[in-house]
Image 1 (cartoon, rainbow, N blue to C red):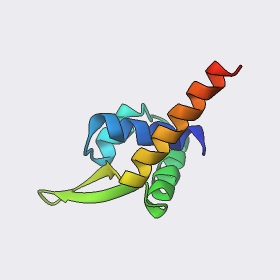
Image 2: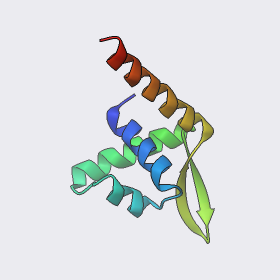
Image 3: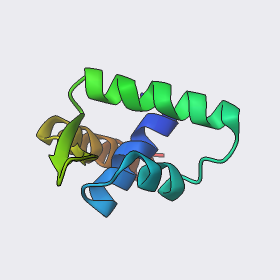
Image 4: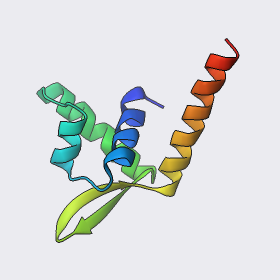
Length: 86
């Protein structure tokens, strides 16, 4: 999985339900090029059911799905194993 996608998942997990602008700010997205890449990766996470869209008071928020949480756990375990076995 691309590093940016994993970072987006981790940020959503940490922040809880976040709006697009909040997530963009948390991920420190500033340039137009970064914004395009960010949007593409967020759409991919949604399409792959790692992130869900939730409406809170008629505002769109992004939340991590169970599938997304499991992926983060697997990546942390893999990172841990890399450290232990290297």
